Image (cartoon, rainbow, N blue to C red; front, side):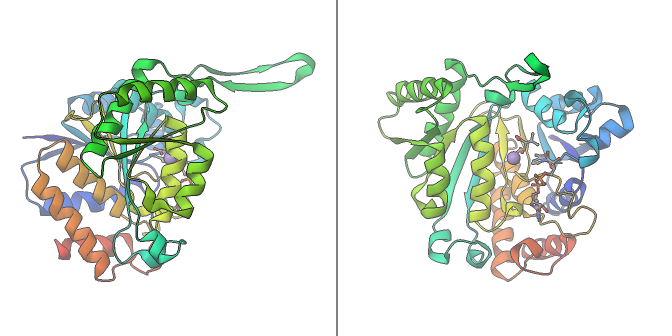
Length: 349
Ligand code: NAD
Ligand code: IPM
Ligand code: MN
């Protein structure tokens, strides 16, 4: 029986994971669940945001469903003790280099997007974000320079093997969609990006059927607002992908709608599934969080890690039906609480 590691974490993490759990339970599948502390919650309990027992569970599990980590009360801690170190550690330790972030406008949410409805309505893309390299994992540090001037640095780097494997995920993802891949970089300024572009062009030789374009990240940010419907699959580095996916989420109505899958190969079974949003300290504990991103992440888990495509389809259809029927949390302009939104999705299911 597949084992699911539930890592609810901080802030709204436990609130949205609870709704995803209700949906999974309603499917009556043969799944076992084991929960473990992570993030600030784990630091409080064990002095470590990613306790060995939690990492061990993540490694034993067939899939991980993750809520969110982060709490301003821990922002002053040394970096390895902060809640965010847990998610970065899980990604690194499990080799989850490929982060798929599908951004689609769920019909009915045109009015929730700040874009004009006809522009927002066309959003249907997957952002393939590299997740274990880049400036996130390069050497970093602080020092005091001449004259007592404080300095900080973070090394941006990729090697060709890291670019090649994520490029392949991008091409393979495009092959299963509309056949268009846009690689986003900053090759006009950054040497890391020039290597990225060179390698993506080399890999393109194996994918004659895919239409490859390159775009600078500043233009990509602008195009996401001007005409997001032009994108099918975007492949990009860790930092640019982080920023562009939050932007894409709002274009599609709300950050509370976007799921993600983090995989160790484009067809690997072990994966970590999580909403792209964070712990939302500003609304935590108030029952205001939109659980859809986490419920849709659970659907991605069913599809990618558990080979339960029919159940995944059912969950996605239930979310779409609830939204089409007018169910809305506050971020979508409605009044439903987190659990009432969960109820609407369960009813649709
Ligand atoms: P955030 O995503 O937590 O919140 C940004 C804004 O979006 C807030 O106004 C929040 O209320 C809103 N929002 C987010 N999710 C929502 C939902 N499901 N429903 C309704 N509204 C929602 O980003 P932030 O405020 O920059 O970061 C807060 C903390 O979360 C920080 O500690 C950060 O490091 C952490 N973080 C964690 C993850 C993660 O665990 N994967 C991701 C991003 C940020
Ligand atoms: C995300 C988050 C994380 C990231 C943080 C919490 C480390 O913003 O998953 O998008 O930057 O990758
Ligand atoms: Mn982010």
